[in-house]
Length: 276
Image 1 (cartoon, rainbow, N blue to C red):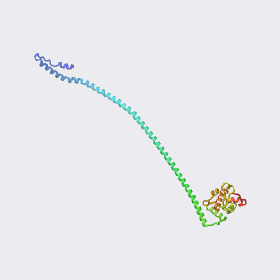
Image 2: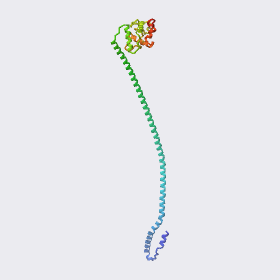
Image 3: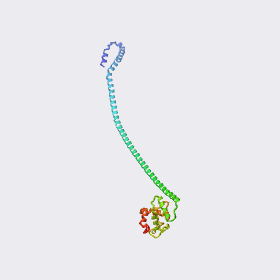
Image 4: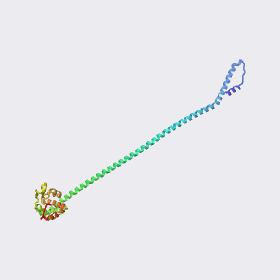
């Protein structure tokens, strides 16, 4: 403002008469307007640096506040993200452990199922082998019986026996031999037949202790039915058939006395006979 006043003071002093006052006033106003138009930009230029500095400081302060606010928000977001990331990592770890435990359980279950299947397969195989063995044994037994019958039929076709005590004894000895059994002497068989039934294949004892028990002694060598069934050979199951009776008696003596010869010798072949 001092500069403005100073510049105004330097303007030429115009002296004019009263009759020229309106023109002077007009000229003075025009000169003032010119001066103002000239000096106003100068004053604004002088005042503008401080204003610019103030604006710049305000902008800088605002920028600093914004930066501080952004930093706080960024830090806050970083702190928020860190727990979230930690929680997510823990969840992933827990999920991994659960998956591993589930896999171990599945593997253990699968192994148990395989073991059970193997056990069942082994049991099934054992049962099949058992059945096969039983079937084989049954077939072998049937084959042996059939073989004995065939051999007996063949022997009978080739050889005939007289229908008397000697013929019965001879045939009984051949049947025992054909079946792989011990064959007693004809003397021992004769002694048993004569001492027990006098050589009668239809003899039956209805008065001794066996008869009182309901199992009378029957046949050529006087054996009771339970004993006869236990020692009869397949195809020779008629207790009143003299050959079948001799065969069963011989096998019974084998089991109890070693053989029929031992039994007959102990009784003197009939000289001091007693029941056997």
